[in-house]
Image (tube, rainbow, N blue to C red; front, side):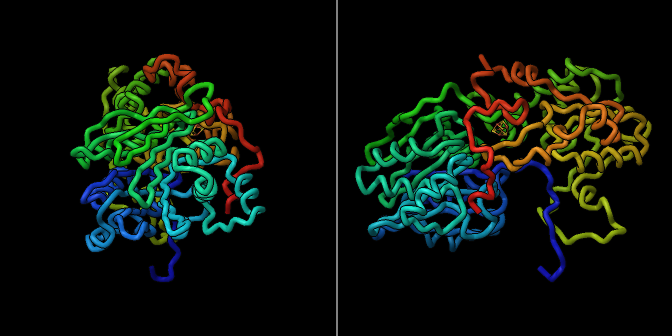
Length: 477
Ligand code: SF4
């Protein structure tokens, strides 16, 4: 990569993982590859596939840093093909971004192997890790997911797989959607009692399949069966599929509402609600809550697109794509020189001069985290001659960190917790700024009793699972 500095240009929030699993299929590895391809938006730092091939009770894996198509080629997939497979794409919220932390994580014990792929964040992992280390455990990675496997194998010494799973999940706390693969090819899907992260069950030509999002089923042409319930554990083996329940029940479901707002793909359906339609409904509600006269409504692509459609339809103001995305920009590139400042933002999105000049514009954003990108983009619109620039944000202000697997982990990173609305409006160079209210976000979700269904802690500080305030992701590093 020469010796020039490269850097990540993306200041957007990041989810930490996407997971996929397929029970006993002659092309399990190849299909898992395509499943991960569809889930690439959930993590771009590393990816891996682990397969049980029915050989010596071993699990075979191929992992690497980077994007799915860069990590695997046909030879890699052929080498590990056969049996059941699980796969993982990762963005690190816990543990360093290094190959040893790439998942699935595989452990060998008494000549048998087990692999796990995890999406979420265990809030008590640091305590459990300390306890395990005091009793002599040696950790190979800085991931919370390794804690799960240590506990699981310790329990397995005393009982069968089902007992070991129940013992393990009774100890871990926080957010987890997880898939475990055994050397015998069993696939076990688990969701924490609050159901923070999505995990769906499907079937592909008679073979059960699990995936973080239904868009992965669409690509591999699997039939969607249902979303796993919070606290549900599905065991898929030669006897078919069996569902057992987590020993502890949560007071209520806490599906991350930010999955709908930003993370998940719009073509996915989570817990019976399509992401595209939910974003559109949020945009509609935003138009009702914060109307303003303007010539056009435009999104900052891509995730603001759907809320912008809803806002435009409700307000009757024309929708325009005033910013064009360059689809061929990688995640990092060579740092530009000082004379090319703002290049990092402009290389990804470029405004259409003819649409912007002399117009009063409403920009729809899906969220504002640190605000620096939004500020630069607003400045670009002004420089092109926009008469007025209003911003409407299709979620409430992010004022609190997330401890359940999203990477805005300190209050200082969140501009809405640092600046009151008027000050932020001025800082971003806007004529007006409004966020969707918490009530509006919940009501527009179309879910009955939304207060009892969603986590919204980053907006209101009401955390559904307690955590050690001293806990940070660095605790595992
Ligand atoms: S705190 Fe926010 S981002 Fe984190 S799980 Fe809850 S809703 Fe999602």
